[in-house]
Amino acid sequence: MSVALMWVVSPTSEVSNGTGFLDSVRVLDSFNSVARCRNLIGSGRPKRGRKNRLNYRSMNEGGYFSSKNRGSFSVISSIVASPTGEIALTSEQKVYDVVLKQAALVKRQLKSRENMEVKPDIALPGTLPLLSEAYDRCGEVCAEYAKTFYLGTLLMTPERRRAIWAIYVWCRRTDELVDGPNASHITPAALDRWETRLEDIFRGRPFDMLDAALSDTVTKFPVDIQPFRDMIEGMRMDLWKSRYKNFDELYLYCYYVAGTVGLMSVPIMGIAPESKATTESVYNASLALGLANQLTNILRDVGEDARRGRIYLPQDELAQAGLSDDDIFAGKVTDKWRNFMKKQIKRARKFFDDAEKGVTELSSASRWPVWASLLLYRQILDEIEANDYNNFTRRAYVSKPKKILALPMAYVKSLVPPSLVKA
Image (cartoon, rainbow, N blue to C red; front, side, top):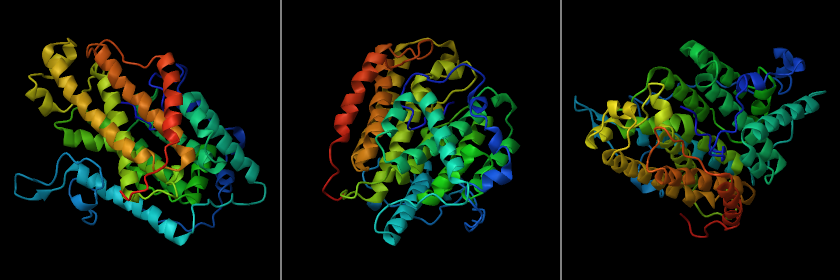
């Protein structure tokens, strides 16, 4: 299942059918030396100890969950009891803990600095041209694989634009590990090595030129490693899990592979200085957009996923609708299927609605590409309906004329100022 990269606003694939993304971004010979690439960032940055990954099955990292401070974010389920009588947290509560921690990191940065001006490039002798080349390569990759989004990033400040490119490329490479041409050869051990490499990036020890751009980015913006780790956890999940018994399970998966992108992006996109919204509410909205995009991907790709033996739909809701895995594999559109799909589309649209509440709170230069992503991805749901809910043999996509019409609409929406009332 492809990651619903928050910034990939073209609903149709813009990826070439060549040898794959990882091959297309092979590093230049001048960056093959690990030692030289590490010098791009320098070794003076304090090393961070390895953080324990959140154990979503058994722990609440501090008990932050409270309906009082959730802002406008929609929570569908709450605390549940296990068969043994123990209280267990739902996926939404677990994810909300992560949201609060990311928001707290940004707020600490804001208190320590009067504004979010980024740090200058690290001026090590002879490294600035190489670092600039690394960012340029990230921009080229973004332009090749996410054309519409790339155009939107050109409205951002140079520092934010380059940082978004670096994050986009890392997410794309991570997704390709389990969804690319070499996916059949990927093992849990390979993902463990990728996570170790991620930790090296955050320690200022990049392996190649694309890593170097991200390593520089995380020194300049209050970006935390946890959402990156969580995305890798989603890739691990794809190696062994092909069914989701309920929406709570599916929600956690969608957070891992797409909601994380929103959490990575907010520190780069920036919150408008005049915004009265809470940092948590902006993070919640960004998370909601990632979840909405991923749910839309799932609904669009039902037939494609079924042909790979995967069903990314809540099993209990299928059963309630009188449907089973056999019905999915048969690929026949029935009234039962239409009614089921109507409910799934309604849920996805609710997440898009939640996302809208936070887009206007972003910095003015960052709103257009996010609005474009939201409007274009939401139109995929309209196309599924237009196809009479046949997502077995027909792939819903937004036509080029509709995409062209959506871009000026997104631009107009991006001009709406943030709320002057505290959210």
